[in-house]
Image (cartoon, rainbow, N blue to C red; front, side, top):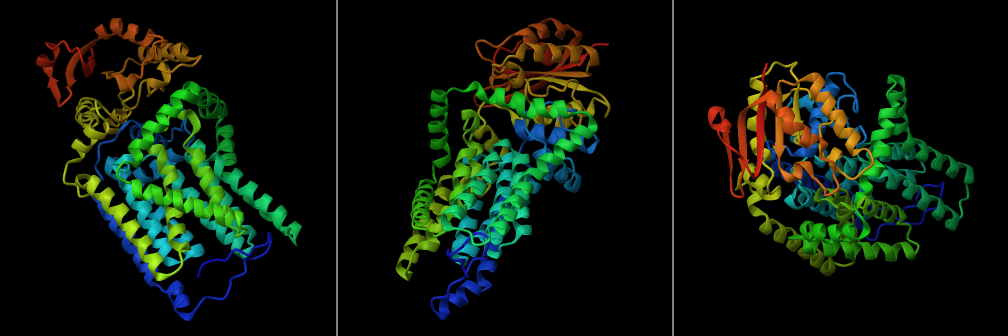
Length: 547
């Protein structure tokens, strides 16, 4: 039965009498739980054909650093990254449970998305009934699987979305039951969401702010109890990061954590100006919304109904706070990459479920159902070959990541793995971190993404020189040179020290293979034939050290 809104801070929510016996039966019926489970199984089954989807760069980075974690090497010690450690721990769990493969990563992603759908269902059922919950779970599962948000790739935004939804669900339960422990648990989940990705920073403060403002407006009858609830929520949200800080302090590696996840991360995301950011936003919105226009319009309508309810004093501020935080989470850096919008999808699903649950009367419910079905069918028709796995994952990868030969990198990695021993280091001049993961070989340098070194910041030349020193000291068995624009992300003002150094240092190595990347195909050549080629376009060279 839905929670009503007559709530005073520090007290349990009072539930109104049910309007009629039929509504009471429907809201308590197990049929909604059964339908929600069916939806979760259906969406999960649609993910199964894509479990071996070729890894892209972010997945490669997560996977490689997670491999090193399983070998006892902490994040930032094995490789430099501007991300917090949470997603690497998630990947490490997947690899430990399911093996060292893309299959393991994407099976973990399947489970994370199933959990997120379940949490959306539970949240909406709590406030608006079973029909709203099933609708929200279906909308999220379908849209999160879509290629418009790179739904086949295990990005940190999926983990952030799961923990944020867990935080919202526990927050609503805590408010309903006036439970300090549940507020603590809610804050803990939002703190874990922050560990997955820094933009989740907005969730806990936004909910705490609305919580206090609502308490002041409503007038709490039990200030000490309410203060304890707020403190528990704040303490829970801080606990995960404080534990990570304590861990790195104990290791003596806190400066690495602080520099890479905050100092450098802040400098790294400040590269895009406001006008470029607006252009990025418009461009990515077109991509993300394409085929799902009806559902996005319904989400906007649901958000407007939510605003009306909050202004009308119906106590829906947790939804509003969660929605505003979700919107802010895609803004930092002004990159607006397609997968950033995954963090917004739970609120899209909640808004549509909110709209479905808010309508009155059978006719209005039927109209809402028709619109939701139409939105889903249009999206399905637009991307039917992907949803039905009628085309191969390699084809999908080439279409979504034009110019990036991610499927072909698997062959290169397997070659390197078969021609090296487990302890041999390799170096990649580029940002193809998936090569380290697939080859299961350590990097000669802690710089595994060259685009950190080519971005516009004060330390780019210093970092390039450090990578050069690393490679010269380690003398890796294989050096893989990636001559692909998106792998380097060179800018007009980027120092060329690393590339200039490679032009001379490459004579310590011999070409064993070349992957030539053309507009319509990629051609892999090995041995003497590869050494006879002088590539001029996008290509990847596999070079073996000459002893």
